[in-house]
Image (cartoon, rainbow, N blue to C red; front, top):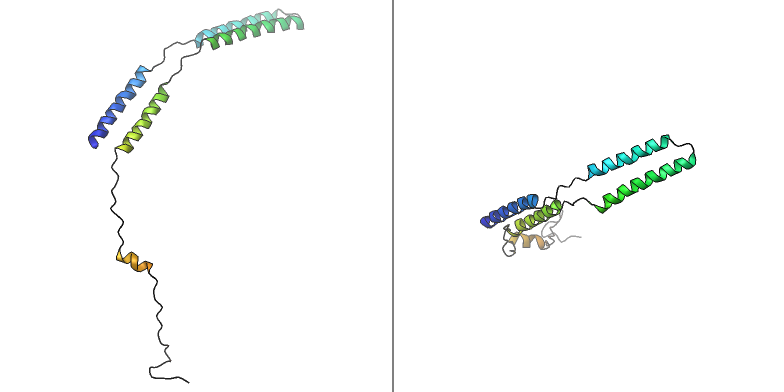
Amino acid sequence: MLTIRRIGAVVLIVAAISVWFGMKPANTDTSSNYGASITAALAGDHANSARTAGAPQQAVVNARTARDLVTIIAEEGANPRPVDERPAALLTLLVIGFGWGLATTRLPVRGPARSSPLALESSLPTPAVTRPAAHDKPGDSGP
């Protein structure tokens, strides 16, 4: 039984290492590109807001800035980041490992239930014993 447990442990360790390195997501760092785009949109907003003379012009500048930021959000949504699925796979291996450990553990074997004489005696009712009172003497017939 111990050999089976060791073989299972080695297989799970190899599987965990394979999952960790084999399921590594592609390294595509797109956050810096969006950061630069957001910075450029906000810089343009700041430059255009400085040249506005009234509320209608401010509304036009704000609308253009909102359009630029929404375009950046849409581009980011169209190019999602790769999902790292390694934690779920490692958790699955952990559950398999616990199951393997439980399946290969020897449980203590209990024999058939035996009834001990003490258990029988304690379960029987005790008979009531009547003793003569101290003032009663044998052969005394009473009043």
